View 1 (cartoon, rainbow, N blue to C red):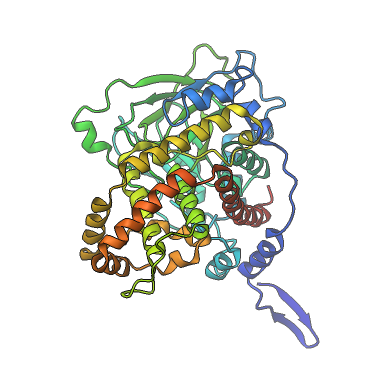
View 2: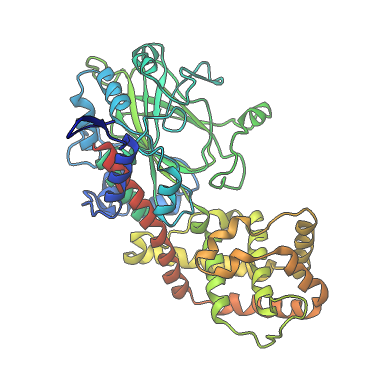
Length: 513
């Protein structure tokens, strides 16, 4: 609260801290902040092992297998995208002064819906909490794992009070790891790295987490992620174990991946790979690959003071549903459906929907059903990547994938199977389109779809619907123009990027680091 002097004395202002934080956030969302690092600089700093290094990574490792990118023995964080943060870390005389800075100067990064495209909606819902202190579990975790078993938490939360913060030294000395999420919302230089990475991989945003682990300790228990990570070692040394993926499918974003206890009992985690990550090294771990890590003393490195602790940043490349290959196909189908006119465009007597719309909706269901069986459909679409615009190899790679998936849709789209699944969903009151609501950003009709209406049309005019579906399948798979779909895909990607950039700008204004 602020005191304001009036004519008769002092009055207490009703301007609260969160009011000021909201004003600062609002003033910053539309601001233009110069980005220090381009996607080219990010690519050079991470994949610096040859002229065609990024191409080799995409073709041979991306979403397929782990990769250790080792830096030369004489490497130092000079003229590197991680140099500013490394200097900031070293500017703190002790690790405890660094922890004090985090607890006392950083604010909470409030959650924003993944498909939110209007920053005012977020502000209206979260205005009371903007600028609040760090929240336990949401912003930071203080955790350790003993003998690769379950995780122990030092704090309970959700609010960390002054007494908790004073105990951070105790937690560190007892072997607890400090895991901070959302570093791109708190440090300008890390926000620049995150933005460069989004353009490198053609995604709306990427997240950056920090892990500070004391000597001879393990923070997180063995786990797997629903996103790919690039682990960038900033200080110290850490030993990693990476296990094979648990199946042919990559886990999707927001899917439950907490299934290691059951699978360990069946000995499905044999054959792990062990690597030592030193300062400057980068480790790529695809989504779905279980892993764990602990700090070790590296006999090959010279240690000074408290260098035995480990600090690394994980760059999380989260593939959201619209930007998987399945998402690209739904987008392409939506675009095609709005422009194409069927030869048998006959109004249906049982619904406001006509055969044209019903056939397109059935094709959306077909793509979803095929995607549940074919692992390629849930892989990342890289059409929005900077390299796609300039590198022939990536254009050829992505176009080949698109053609292959279209062939799969044409051969495997079965009308009777679709109808059977549609009927089962109606009986169970399930919604096939629940995870496709993002398509309404392109096609408003998608927001009002009712499965029961579609099924009624199919049930009463099955022969006509089947004929329309067969025509739709053939015309879409053979007539969709790839370049037109790419154009609309990039328009959607830009919509997502704008809201993420606004959010980051607002959060950075609150943290001022």
